[in-house]
Length: 116
Image (cartoon, rainbow, N blue to C red):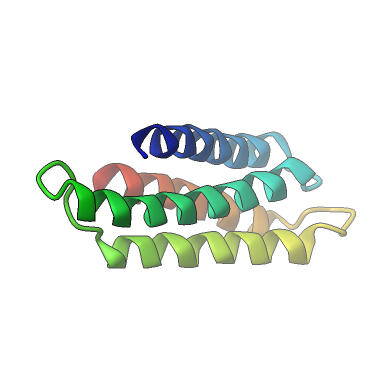
């Protein structure tokens, strides 16, 4: 179970790096890798939460309880990033405000993960 958690965590890190790196690389037109990375981050994040439930039940001394507010905030941030990405994916010129919002949300999601 812990090996699965470690693999999902590595994939989640790769997804967040791809999301932020893809955004920083594509200022004029949205890179499709940004959408793929954000979907990967969503799937791996949900998988990490699911595995964490079983690890907390199996090893209550090693793992602390899940902070549902942090999970909810990060989920809402990722849904907003996905919505902004899909709304602007077909546009010839990526709006600067949408780009800035997606970068700010990505950085805030990473900061929330590190701090809490």
